[in-house]
Amino acid sequence: MTSLPSSADLAADHGWATVLAFGAHPDDLDFGAAATIAGLTRAGVAVTYVVMTDGGAGGFDAEHHDTITERRHQEQRDAAAHLGVRDVEFLGERDGYLEPSHDVVGRVVEAMRRHRPDAVFSMHPERDWSRLQRSHPDHLAAGEAVVRASYPAVENPFAYPELLTSGLDAFHLRWLVLYCHPAERTNLAVDVTGFEHDKLAALRFHSSQHPDVPKMEAFVLDGMARAHQQWSTSGEAGDVVPVASGGDGGRRYAETFQLVRVNDSTTISGF
Ligand SMILES: [Zn+2]
Image (cartoon, rainbow, N blue to C red; front, side, top):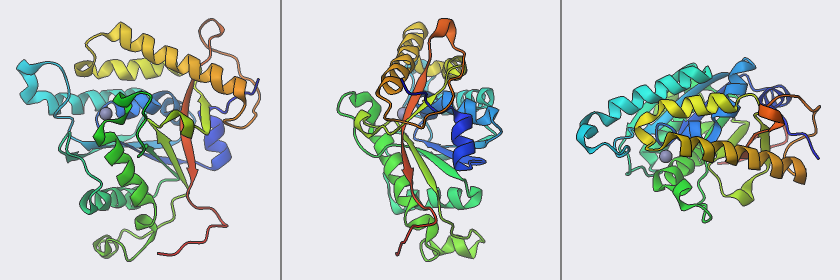
């Protein structure tokens, strides 16, 4: 059995002090990465959320649908605050209509250059055919926009030149951490044992999205437990680190990602 790295291990091993985390809708980041994010903030990493759409097409309550955007923004702020996330930015794109257009990519580049993070979390641009609900078109568009921004636009001073003019210099992003991905893309499993209840707490704040909270919580906990079992047994995702204790009754939990090294000291690139 292989021990999986914790969030603190990741931050220490890769030198992550700041993380910028993108999601298409309010609640996407919390479903995909809340336990890992909680571990990062606990380790002292400064995390900022960027939610790309207004969430206006979500929820189940037709009677109060005119206020759904404001409600979902507050739900996301509350969930992020619980996890220790420093700030939440909303790009305000229309829910259900997100496309990786040059306008949207430019807005992502603007956010990246303003924050200059050590790592960017993003949804995955590829469709998961084993569970189509993960691959809402906005999720794919969000992933594509962030990946396009990551190379070449954020590091090319001649891309979106108005950003350079306004003082936002190009920089080389080192790490992309993709969540909501097809299972076959997994190359990183993070041991989030001890943070599983922070994830459930964050998700409970998104009350407009959960018609059945116990069912949702069981689904999420079971998924994290199965991920830990699968990846600690296969030994294919993550580095070997000392085994830590913790978890409910010895149960251990993981969140999985595709980790992409965008730039390091050996990278050669052109535009
Ligand atoms: Zn979503």
